[in-house]
Length: 232
Figure 1 (tube, rainbow, N blue to C red):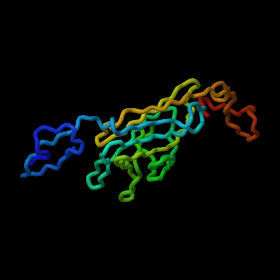
Figure 2: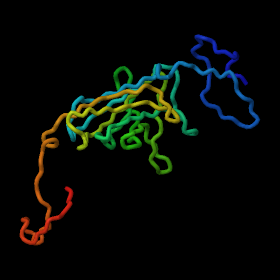
Figure 3: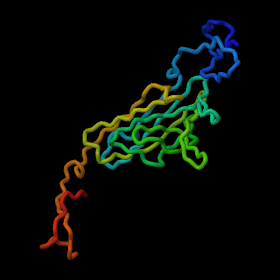
Figure 4: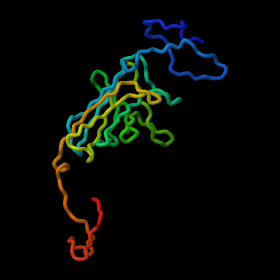
């Protein structure tokens, strides 16, 4: 059977029918004339990312926003039966940042107004994969988010600056939207965060001793031996 009547696609026919996947069964004829468009989806689906602050210190919370806009006529729907379709957002987070559990939420944006649609923590520690939370057979799992034609959806989450960050360091998060098989759908978007020096963490000095206080008087006296190699 033919998907399209002609062996060649017709230029300018925007609604030309085509398929990206087939279920092949024994005895069925091979489908022909399945013309795939060469325009990249990244021209129609865009991803942008920003942080709510440009400068932070160790211990600070930083908010991140990722927005996906679909200017095409294709619906990216998740099919529960096949486990295919929909979109994940992959976020590569620097090791000096840590995702704050429970902070991720999705909303649909229309005329400047936001409507909550989903929530759920991502998979991974620094290579984060965001989707929507689903409970199946009592187990928690992340499935893709849906992006319909004409949609604009926004992901918000928070991260904390850990003690491994250094003053003057610039931390860059990189995000991409992915299809099935981790195929990139959009161009990579980045958000930059400058770490400000903190006198307490960067220039502080702590002196002291660790010892066994045998008589419990709080003072290291004769017979109160030190503890070698102790870490606080």
